[in-house]
Amino acid sequence: MGEFLLSPRKFAISDPGTASTAAPAPRPPPPPSHAELLCDGIAAFAPNMPPLLKWSGIQWLLSDRVYEYANRQVHFAAVIMSPAGTSGCAAGGHFRHVACKTVTQPIPEKQLEMLRAAVEAAGAGGYAAGCGAAAATTADGAAAAAAAPGSRPQLLAALPPHVMALAREPVCNSLVAERLRAVHGPAAAERSMSTILGWGMEEVAGVAGLPAAFRMVTYSEWLENGSLRDYLVKLFAPAMLVKASAQSQLQPDGERYAKTLRALLEVVDLLVLLSRAGVVLGDLKLENLLVDSDGHVKLTDLDGASLLPLEDVQAAAAKAQAMAAATAALLGGAGRPAASAAAGASGCPGLNALWLALDQQPAPAAPSMLTPAFAPPEMMLAAPAQPYMTAQSHVYLVGASLEYVLTQLLDEALAPSRQVAAGRLRDLEFVGELRELARGMQAQDAAKRPAAHTLRQQLQEMQARW
Image (cartoon, rainbow, N blue to C red):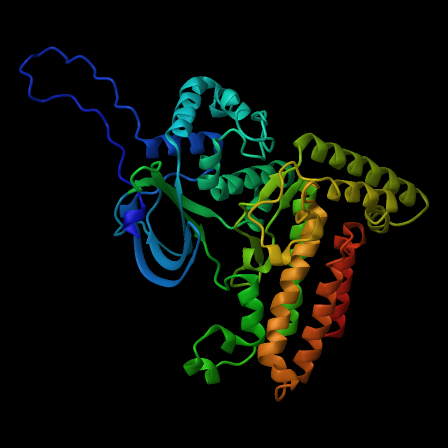
């Protein structure tokens, strides 16, 4: 994969051939290459992007799987990665499980020039300040937002359209991380999101007569248990994940019910985290949730993200805090213990209605990068209606993708040909009950989908029974 990462930057040097003792006149630096220009623009627009990687700082040990679709490739690999900005893997390298993603995209010369002009015009004001004119020429016409933490433009309107297509995933990841840090703090952001370890850009051989093509590469952490989809299959039917020659040696996990319900309760916590931060994800599904060695769940693949205005999120949080404090004081004044009063305040109807209003607020961006098989009706509206997505869409997306994998388990492992497999009746009952819960998450009317506190209660009730 070294060919996917970067040629080093070229720097101007003085000419050693002159005999003059006077200092030579400084040479102007060469203009950046188009690949360097793209890196500068993207990094300035999304300042939380990790440093650029050097190809010589990555040593591939094993490539497990490769997925290809359209202009994208995903490699799951084990690598030794040196600290950003250093070369060579002999010293200071760290062993990592990674997902290496590449996106190849032609970019018209006109858009490259727009980007160059915006970067040059930005100066000390920052990239967003210099790209207002470029933003006005994009399809949606949205201008760059203020640079306060958590308030950067969620539509990526400040980047030319083909650049957006190239850099959407890492830039969205950066914007979501910035929003979560602003609302919930750095620890919550780190705990809930997989980390982009590095990225790079290079110009690749194009086709005669077509615009120059560029390949963007990102390295993201890939957690030990893989996706939540793979994790559930591994718990109940690990033979489905390997070749037939090894199937007889694999057995279901002895703690599969408890581990499944703990992971799904963490997913509910993530839904609340996203909702309270005003983050809406258009492709939230089990394949885009990762599970670490301890069974903890993290978000990944955020290229369909859109952010509600930060001021709306902050206003809802301030009202919720005031309402909870007033209710807790009222309940405490009635002689109830402080802890009981706080619990009562957290479940008061007014507070739930406040958060429901935020959950129903449409995201500024139209749905993108979605999986149609899992998408709720509001994301698939046909013209002239305008598709939209809200935090309530998350419930449907997770429910649809959960039902899909549970149905696979039933059809391929627990009850193939509608015959219960030997010794799997209890598994069949558990998976069947969980599938009914998943179906209940897919109400066509978004207002009838269960709220997070309802889902949490249903899962906790299953925990008590199983």
